[in-house]
Image (cartoon, rainbow, N blue to C red; front, side, top):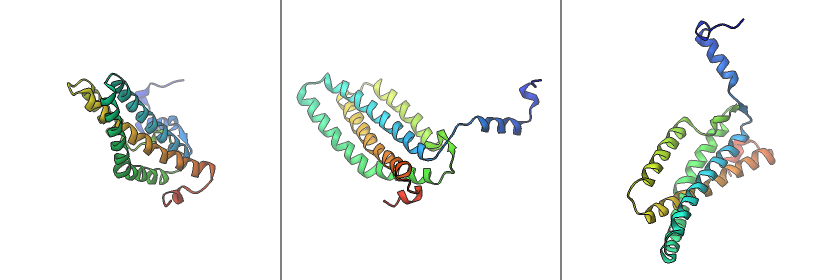
Length: 169
């Protein structure tokens, strides 16, 4: 006989919800984080490409080159530190772990903010040359940073090296 949900104590409901949470081996979180960062990076680069393809060749070439410089700069000065912290955080998680742990709660808040900012920018009166530059730079940096997650996945999953060792190399 089934009981109405309100008759089940809250602690029992929480335990039931915990059982529904999909668990994976920690190394899969590196792959998931890499796929997410790659996907967002490629999406931003694609949108920049659409805007660039509608421009005169000289403008498009200049903006694309400037976008590459910004991408490498953002990657080197900002994203390598962010990815290293994220890899350390993932290495400290228990194994197995919830599948959504590939991102921190703070990271999910940042994602929501960035989505909102992207929507606002696309609907703003800003010149598409500026947007193409920003999107190409950010997309390229995200794509480059995603490679660290794949490297970490390879070391832990394929080479069978301990997770904590990976943060030193």
